[in-house]
Amino acid sequence: MQDNLIFGADASSYRASEPLPSWQRQLSQAIRDPAELCRRLQLPDTWQVGASAGHALFETCVPEAFLRRIKPNQPDDPLLRQVLPLGDETLQTPGYVNDPLDEVQQRPARGVIHKYAGRVLLIASPNCAINCRYCFRRHFPYADNSPSRAQWQEAFDYLQADPSIREVILSGGDPLAANDRHLAWLVTQLEQIPHLKRLRIHSRLPIVIPDRVDQALLDWLEASRLQTVMVLHANHANEIDQAVRAACQRLQGAGVTLLNQSVLLRGVNDSTEALAALSEQLFDAGVLPYYLHVLDPVQGAAHFNVPDAEARQLITTLRDELPGFLMPRLVREIPGEASKTPLV
Ligand SMILES: *Cc1c(COP(=O)(O)O)cnc(C)c1O
Ligand code: SF4
Image 1 (cartoon, rainbow, N blue to C red):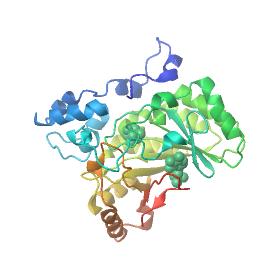
Image 2: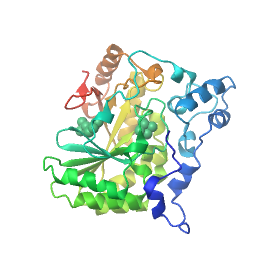
Image 3: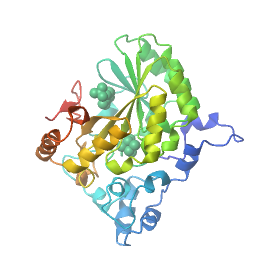
Image 4: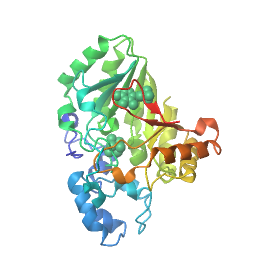
């Protein structure tokens, strides 16, 4: 469904003679074969059947830089669990659907989702640098929602016509899977809309491939007149290593405010210890916790679910252990609501 090797309209803006940036080379070399993933992590052969069944529904994608943080021969490693396809993904669970957030219905223009007051989300790239097994977009019709440059004009016209919009959120997929030439162009267009004040970027890439935060990215971030916020996505303390900390430092140097959103996931971060360690590691990297999302009920991800009562209890216990500014807000996205809905 998602073909991470193809960068849509963006690829054409790289000439054949130009070397690919390091991050793009790393992404093109990501592990996409579930059997290879099992081999590389020395998993018993018994994992392979499930891995290929899950892969058939949503392809495997794990870049080397992320793989390095996974401990071999440990099937319940919290990072492995996020990326290893499982037979459980084939189970049909009542209440779990293909488009849990009903986003297909919310498009005022191609690539535009406008659900909340004052802020609009743009699908800036249909691709991701990693395929997270719990992803609520695992069944998303991306091909229909990745506009070409000419089609972007429709989105700009929509933003231009509504002065109540102050913030544009670049999302995806992962917006930073697009190349910097494309992103710099996009941001330059947005800057011409006078009522826009803020640019927000929702990206897992600085966590997955920290080399994504290269000079080409920093150049357009630094040059922008818009206040820039980046909401990263890490779910476990082990995702934050020295390379991630250095990438965060570079982003801060470019004036970017750093936040993090996580998903509460069974077997990954469903303990107060794991959540406290994540908040501590984030803050060490200069990142503040923002949201802790409960799982969206997407078909194939039910095995990641943590029931609401348990989620509330975790947050209540966590509050006794952490300073207030290290507490993520536990929220659910309910289609039709004017904001994310807090659970506690
Ligand atoms: C989550 C989301 C936002 C951002 O919401 P905040 O509460 O401002 O972080 C904006 N638009 C859409 C469509 C969203 O799903
Ligand atoms: S990076 Fe985000 S959008 Fe991409 S697969 Fe992971 S959770 Fe989904």
